[in-house]
Amino acid sequence: MKNKIITANWKSNGDTNSLHNLLIPIIDFIKKKESMLKLIVVPPFVYLNQVHNIIINTNIMLGAQNVDIHSNGAFTGEISVDMLKDVHVCYVIIGHSERKIYHKESDLLISKKIQIVQNAKLIPIFCIGETEQDYKNGITNQICQKQIDSVFNVIGEKAFNNMIIAYEPVWAIGSGRTPSIDFIQDTCGHITDYILNIQNVKKKSFFIQYGGSVNESNIEKLSKVIEIDGFLIGSASLFISRFLKILTKYS
Ligand SMILES: O=C(CO)COP(=O)(O)O
Image 1 (spheres, helix red, strand yellow):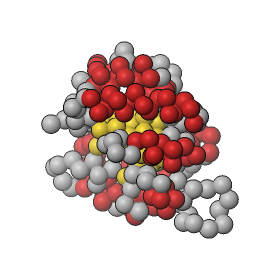
Image 2 (cartoon, helix red, strand yellow):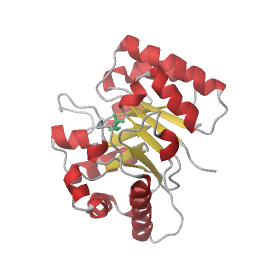
Image 3 (cartoon, helix red, strand yellow):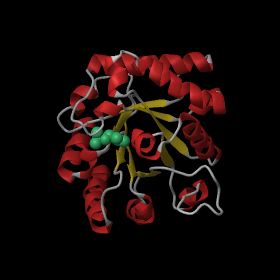
Image 4 (cartoon, helix red, strand yellow):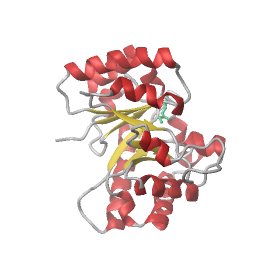
């Protein structure tokens, strides 16, 4: 049976009302549909508690968009992994390209965050992917390998067990453009083989999502990629009619 995991990354969007109004029909859909689909919703930090209270008693899971590497203490403005656990977070997006671009997060910091998250028994959604220039230069595989190597160097091969890896080409995020199906297939296949080789095993113990301009028009085509276990969706997950179409087509 193919894994189907959808993560809705709401980024820095929404408010108390709009997130409530978004979630109610999603919960209705998930309850009615006997589907193998697993759904993770990832609101901004300040709405985690509210969202938890709405999705409680459903099988929708809660994710966070970031975490600090420090535990509780004098780190003004930061959120620790203990706080995330306290508000029932199970997944944490780490290494998103927007955090690399706007907050200058390095591969080393990202690897440390993954370690913190795993030590707390939460599951990282580790974002990797190439810039447009890398894509044009034909070095996508090397870029993904470098990002994977950094995690391996800090945590070792066990890092990849049960992890979600999100292949998100930076140039596809929010642009309306996606790589070809063949390209996604080849890249995700390469990521899988590369990690299996590091682990020296044959069986995959991690999941791969694709992210970047996934929408209601391309979801059917994208879901044909056999290497993919699901999708990390940004803007299309903020509009209920679009998101329900995605869930319907993918279920
Ligand atoms: O960055 C993304 C999800 O983390 C993708 O965003 P879009 O779906 O808006 O392209």
